[in-house]
Amino acid sequence: MTSPADSSPVSTGLLWPETMPARDYLTLIGTGAEDQVDLAAAALALASLDRPQALLAEARSHLSKLGRSVAVAFEAVGRDDLGARSFALVAALARQEGYDGDRDHYDDLANANLISVIERRRGLPVALGIVYLHAARLQGWAAVGLDFPGHFVIRIEHGGGRAILDPFNGGAVLEVADLRRLLKAAHGPTAELETRHYNALPDRAVLLRLENNVKRRLIAARALSGAAEHVRRMLLVAPDETGLWRELGLIEAESGNLKAASTALERFVAKAPEGGERQQTRKLIQELKSRLH
Image (cartoon, rainbow, N blue to C red; front, side, top):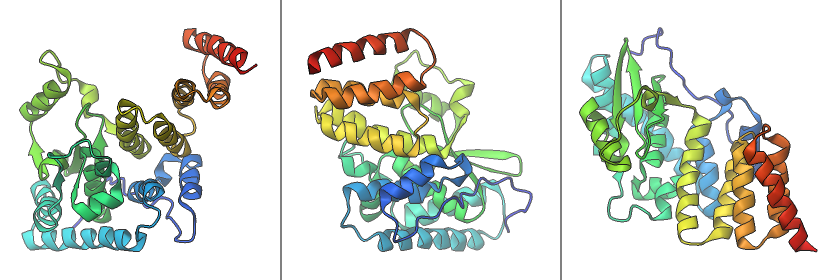
């Protein structure tokens, strides 16, 4: 019942060959165009770097099964409208499979690892959002993540209508009042909704948001070597994100890895536009190199 007129951003992107190492696949994603990003496959590849012994075949099979479950739920509704599509996603993912937010152990790093999320059916908003986006796009439906701060949500579109869903809370359909409440909970009572909060987030940026969750928690725990590793993973999928080189350099400098810090900061200086931050970074590189001698 899917309308051929739908302008769906289905991600058929670069498939992940089973024999290809995860880092090689992520590097391919990083050098490819945005429309080549296969969101779920890339998230699985990132997850496998922390779970190298995990059975990826089971995770891949489950993701395919989710697509079929959504299709069955959608057919059972007997009509094709925005409400039917929202219902099918929630029926299959939240009710049938039990996907929901992990409120009891929100900061557990497993909540950002897609393999663990699939196994536990629990996760952070962005990790669950990736599952929802994948299942929707397998139907050929238009589905995107939104650049909404503090709480990742997705949007599906059909027939000129739009619905915003909250994968962390059972796929609940969010109205303006709900979004305003989420925003104020994350950024304080004076925060107000802006047009940019409804902007679609490119899939590459969704992957960065996923990894950023882990990086921030590791920095807070003073696990700086782990934080640096996750910035390197972000650079695999987004090598043109210049600011990540500076962030990596600062983390390495704080860790005492002065040579690695200088190298990363030099990459930033080579790529960044002229400005105050670039000048400050040049001075920092000089200071680091003076400490190396």
